[in-house]
Structure formats: structure tokens, C-alpha cells
Image (cartoon, rainbow, N blue to C red; front, side, top):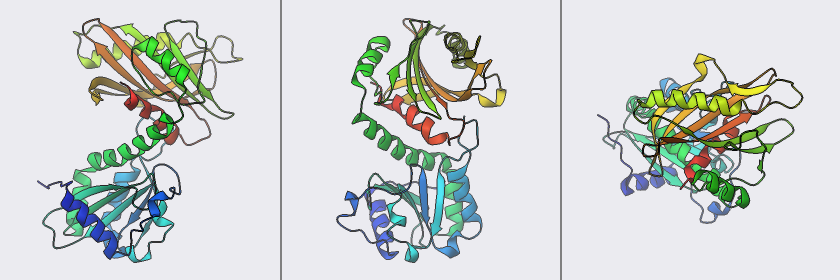
Length: 335
């Protein structure tokens, strides 16, 4: 079994690797802002290591299709691969750096994380392995963990940004309605619904829109988690049916019945609270509208009530991943 070390020793290896590879740390560089966009990654790896199966393993790690989107898009974008000696100041300014260090002196493949070395906000992940083959095996075996480390960095950056720009009145309204505090970014407004129990916040743009929904519904806590999730999906459909499309008579929102669109994760822990995570697509009956959604469901076994917080996106022309991610990150601000 390959061991994973996230220790001070690993951090020393990180900085040593960067120094030896020509990635010199400047004392004032962290005051600079990152270039590129969220989820962009520059891979720093020797050309002889990168060629062949390692490049395929890293591409599978970073650019595997992200779940729940209506149009394929990877978890991350690989902007480029660059050899250490050829790494430019611009390369070092991207929000995510993945450094591959092949060092025969180490016993096993490891990884380490560092923040804001060259710019901010930035995540620098270094994978160190004795051979290219052991590096490939480590990446393949630890793909979910490594993606989560980089995703956590993006999530913290997004939530830190929006926490400085909150819609305070909507946040007070959300707490009154749900009993939970959650950051609501500036730019959202409260939309009217025909169901007073359904909370709906909307941020509207000329070519896209972001939605936040919240409500409580009855649920049988003695049912298995997957059956609870299906029960809640029926409640979501009923709530969404009270929302119609402008100018489309008889239209209403609903969850898509495309079977490949739905995924359920029943054991997500966020800030000490247990949630079920629902991913899928929504659509408007009687109109050409739709998009991806992600919903979080917390069941209170004492009250037999489920709290549903749902984030949805309408973006027929724009890439969806970043727009949906910045919404679903907000669930991690709940307390």
C-alpha cells in the first residue's frame, strides 16, 4: 500500500523541489493576484517524465468529466505542461500548480500542499515519487483525494471572496426560513413564488441565471437513505412546479427524467452536519430552458423534516462548471 505523507518533511521537499527546478520563491510574490481563471492548472514536470503514460494519468486526474453538467467539462483545465527550467513568471501565476518531482532518493510516492507561494489565491500541489511508474500508480490510486485537495482550495477561495461581499438582508431571511446561516452573495434578489414555503433567490444576467432554493418537507427518517432521497425529489418537483417561465403559457420547472443525469450521494458531511447530495438536470416543461442542479438534503429524525438547499444554473451558452461550483460552494458556509 502506498503511503501518503502531508507533513513538514513533505513541505521541505516541496520548497527544495521548487528551488532546484528554477521556481524561485520571491518574498513579495504572494502580494500579486493570480492569472487565468478558477480551475486552471499548470503542470510543472520534466519533459522526459511527462511523455507517455504519466501525461495520460494526469489528464485523467484533472480533466475527467465533472458530474452533473449538461455539457461535458472536466474537473479542471490543464492550461499547459512546462519543464521546470522553462517555467516562466506567468506560468507561476496560475491559481493551481501541479509539480511532478521524480526523485529516486524517496521511498514511496507522496504529495504535499502549499498556498499562495507565487500569487494569491493559489494552490501548489507537489507529487514526489521515486520513479515515473510509482508516480502513475499513486495518481491513479489517489485520484479522488488529489482532486478533493485542489477542489478545497477553489472552494475556500470562492467562499472567502463572497463572504466579503454578502447580501446581508437575504442572509437574515435565509436564516429565518431555514434556521441555518449561509453566505448569500451580493447580486442575488428574492424572487416571488406561489408557494410561501419555497425560498427562491435569483441572480440574473443577460445570457445566464443562477438560482438558490430552500424549503422544508416531510420525510420518513426510518426509510433507507436512498429512499429518503427519492421522496425528497418528489417534493422538489412539487415545489419547482410553482415556478413558470416568462412568456411561456402553462410552463413550469421540473426535474429532468433523463436517467443518466441523476446521481445521489447519501453520506456527505459538511461542517459537522450530515447531508445527502443530489446532482442532476432541471428543465422547463413547455419551454426550451434547463440546466444542471445540485441539491443538499439534511434530515432531522426528531422532527421528520428534511431541509433542502438547492442550487441551479441556466447557462445555455457559457461553460457551466465554474458557475455551478461557485453556487454549491456556499453550502460549506452553513452553520
